[in-house]
Amino acid sequence: MTFWEVTLFLLDGFKISLLIFAVTLLLGVPLGLPIAFCSMSRFKPVQAISKVIVWIVRGIPLMLQIFIIYYVPGLLFSFPMFSQIDRYMLIHHGVQDAGRITAVLIAFVINYACYFSEIYRGGIESISKGQYEAGYVLGLTNSQVFKKIILKQVVQRIVPPMSNEVITLIKDTALANCIVVCEIIKQAKELAATKAMVWPLFYTGVFYLIFVGILTICLGKVEKKLSYFRS
Image (cartoon, rainbow, N blue to C red; front, top):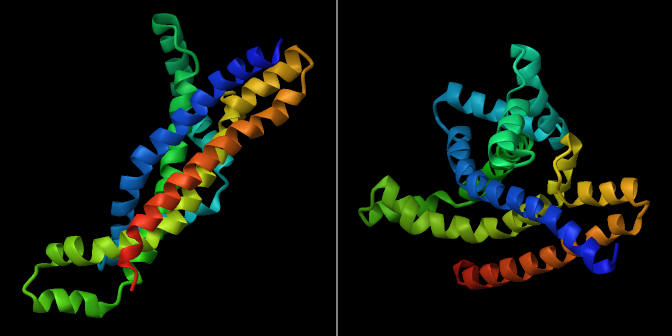
């Protein structure tokens, strides 16, 4: 295979990596907010359940969570749900790895939603009570105080840690190959096994570096635009 053919072959796998990245952000970022509110809830049972869930998800390696999501339903209920999805989508629609990708997406969304929730919680709790009191003096309701005063400051404060998580996310997509999802690392391994070509495995790093560079520039611009919220 030529260099260009290898690049195109790896690019097909990187599209799957980008799909996992995009869906995880699209669902995980908003899902983290209600989890954060539950963790800060004054209703102790809700707070306790939320904190336990976050503790478990953050404490178990993401690769193991992918295994749990993919294999446990079949072990408990004798119904390999994701394998059935794989088979159905391949036969009827010609789509490969649909079930495996679904399992990976579920694991990633849950995992990153819990991490994002802790970032949200830290950002919200970092705002002084005086900010709330000032809003109440102006006659604002709780929701108005949060939307007009607190939220803008929280967004500015959480951008740096969120940026780190977003950059980590694109690299974590490589874990999808643990259940044979054809992302870029899996594609490179396939070339190593079938074509005895090892260098594409190292070449995958270029794809990640370029994308992380683009993310760093974009996130840096976002942080700069929000810099006027700094006290």
